[in-house]
Structures are given as structure tokens and as C-alpha cells.
Image (cartoon, rainbow, N blue to C red; front, side):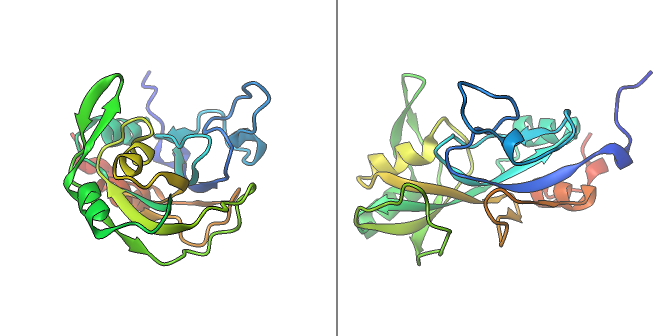
Length: 204
């Protein structure tokens, strides 16, 4: 018998992961986790992840086909972040972020792929606890790969360390007005179109 879920059983959510919350539903060393905020079926997991000290948009689903397409199909899905960096970022640093720079990944040198970087007005996110007190500015950074702590490594390599990191977009899904600890449900068609650019049955 096929284990493939019927379309009616497939679920898709866009959630706003709060700061210092693990991108998982199981406890670990007493830390806060997604299960403290959301009561989803046990087969729902995050599509990708956000580090504990990062905030913002996570996609949750039980659609294994979507996960496979998003993670392994070479689609190079854009991931957009609002990044609060230490100091007022220079034009030169923005150009470096956009054109690619060298970071360390798994002990080896890695040249980041071309990205999109620009200054960003204060996005007005809810205050973080603890607050960021250093002089800072905001940038928008869109990347098309997903190396471990890539955004933080990139801004540090450009000379402007990350102070706060909020993912605002995954594909064409956006954080919008979703508040920390809240979620919205997506339709199957919308999730596939916004994440992969194709409808559910258009992949081989």
C-alpha cells in the first residue's frame, strides 16, 4: 500500500519563530522549542531551519515531496533576511555581500554565491529581549544557498557583525504581519507556487 498522503491530509504553515527558540518540537536541555508555541500533528516539521538566536519565517509541512524538491532539486530558493548589523554599513561592504566573499564552512574556504544586499529602514520589529544596544543599522540580504550560519559569517567577513537576524522571506512566502509565536496556514497550491514556483504536480 502506498504511504503517500492524500492532498487533503497535507498541511502547510508559515510561522514566526521567536528569538532563542529551537527550530524543533522536542525538548533539548530545557530550551524553548516550537512545541511550546504550536500544537501541530506529529508529522509536521520545519522546511529548513533557523538557528536558536535567529528569528522570523519558518515553513512547516508534512509534505515530503515539497521538502525533497525544496532541499534537493537545485531550485536555489531565495531566502531573505532583515539583518541588524553593528555600525552603519558602507557601500563597499554591501557590494562585497552582493558579489560574494570568502567564509569558512566545515573547516574549508567557501566563496558565497551572488546575493542581493541593500540598506533597509528600521523594520519596526517587536523589541528583542535582551535588546540590541550597540550603534547599528539594518540591511536586507537575500541569499540563494544555505550554509551553516551563513548570513552571520558573511556580514562579519564584510566588517559589520550581525546583531539581530530575522528571516522575512522564503521563496515568495513572506513574514508579513505574522507576530512572534504565531502562524498562518497556506493552501497546498500556494505553498508549492510560492516556494518552488510550480504547482504541486509539475515536478517529475
